[in-house]
Image 1: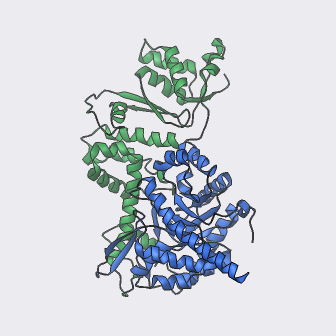
Image 2: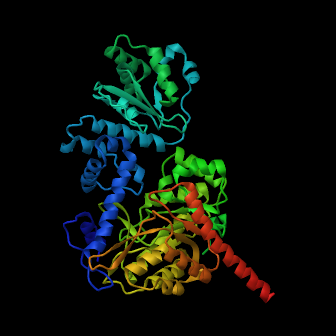
Image 3: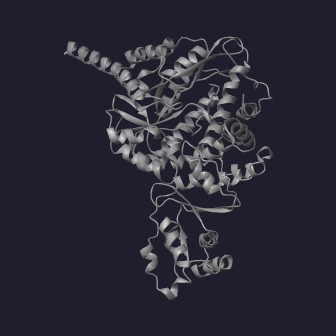
Length: 249
Length: 295
């Protein structure tokens, strides 16, 4: 028995029990080998349900388990850290035909994947509003900001922030709003925070997260919406804990 | 060989519980009189956030047993260096009183399979597992305990008895053994062996910790009893009897209640710990009485 053939049989229920496997009766027993097959499928499916609980609630347990098993067949975890399993699950959902009737499902999964990353991100004090205020006004335009390790921005054509929020309690209020939404995820201390922000603010945040200067990010936001309120957006994002520091202007 | 970090001290000879996030607030508020807490190392290998905050609070109040489930010590492939480095960092950060892993494999070229898979016991696998245990101990800088597995199948290739296999690894590497009494019952029933005879042959002087848990029961294709290592219920009566028998041989040993699925209210776990601790207390009294007679 080598672990190569054992693994192949483990991952394909159509395969017979691998050679060399036996029992106290002196013969292979499919029901015994199936315990291992089941353990792998159930434990990986459970890991996904723990990371994507809102996706699971949106589609129900049976559909979720079927989708999870289809994903597991294409992608095994690349490390023993189960909380990191499923980084590519949102992309898989995008191409999963049976879920096509729920076009917001993949982006909801993207939000949940980022939530877990934020939950486990390094402990770093966020940039304080005072530190931003201390920058000389004439240097502000050329300043770039260091993203906080927990910070993420998820932009969607669907109201996934509203959907996510509606599924946090036991009772779900039905959401019919299907408008684009952008969500900021931060963890200024220990609790992960999820906020829906305005479109121009999201353009501003996206530019800052990719390393554009505050001046460049502001110009991009104004292009999206001439009514963009720089002060409100800047202080808002910093207050949410989006940044860890200021780089040299 | 001795390692500097072994000086972090041993687990108290009491009952301990697996730490479950849903119980954290209650534990920190009520500070129950528990001997130690055990955590799965992999759940604390993120960079920061709530898991580390919680573990720091626990370590400030209780001894810690760090129990790995992902090292894949029994794999044919080399150990994952990145994972070993994460384990080393965790040991250095929290200085657990015990470090343990399984005689099993879970990693293959295609990925991590998230189950404790069995291996045949041969001269070749003995060499390999011993080398892996040695590598873990050298890297982390302390001794570890190796746990006996629960298994559902046997291998035609196996030429070495499981106890002899574990004993030989311990002899070669200096590691201790973690005796999972539920695993003994599960494997014994599944392979139609005598669980009490297994315990009677086990090298008790090497046992640094005992695990107890609940099992599920089904039948195999031939209709024979098949026990599943489920960690989802109270310790079964036959396992608890085997535990009393085990403690009769080992004397008092730190004992963990494992309950990882369908986790109940904390009070239920506490009651299980109390039940195990009564067995440890009786054994300690017997031993003291026997010392007193000799003195």
